[in-house]
Amino acid sequence: MPSSAANYGKRSAAMQAHVVRLIDQFQPEIVTFEPVSTERAELEHFARAVVERRPLSIVGGDEVHNVAVLESIVRSIREQARIHVA
Image (cartoon, rainbow, N blue to C red; front, side, top):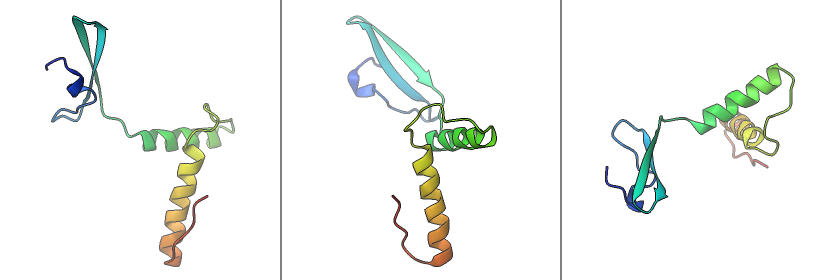
């Protein structure tokens, strides 16, 4: 893979994320990450915190809002109406 800024954050056919990090101007390093669903990870973190009765690791994260969105989706489908999410 060429080492240019144009490749920053590109995904391969296997859906791996590739990030080019410059060690210095002549030595780029390509770091590869496996695909991850951030929404799923946040919801799983929220569920574990609820089950374990502990606070969220990162206060002010998106977990509470994401749960509110999912609950609003379910309510919207049930009521066949638009639901405002705070």
